[in-house]
Length: 101
Image 1 (spheres, rainbow, N blue to C red):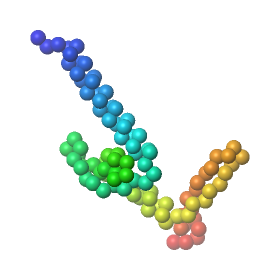
Image 2 (cartoon, rainbow, N blue to C red):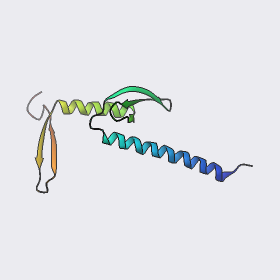
Image 3 (tube, one colour):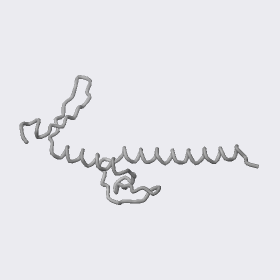
């Protein structure tokens, strides 16, 4: 006879293990100062990219957006300002904002 309690416990444990893995990956991603995506690995039959620095695993959409952001920042200047509360604000000024191309 099928045991619903055992089946539920097994599926619950698998789901919790997956959530722990996701949380660990998020911590790695957020702690890395500069991602260096290099390796393409198969993760659950889907191609993913692994950062050489922190080891986080990301999909193609994240990597493309991250690289576009890096290109944007490298072609910009950073303006640093502080408010009366001591909070620092970083503003990226692109070429178009400076009157360039």
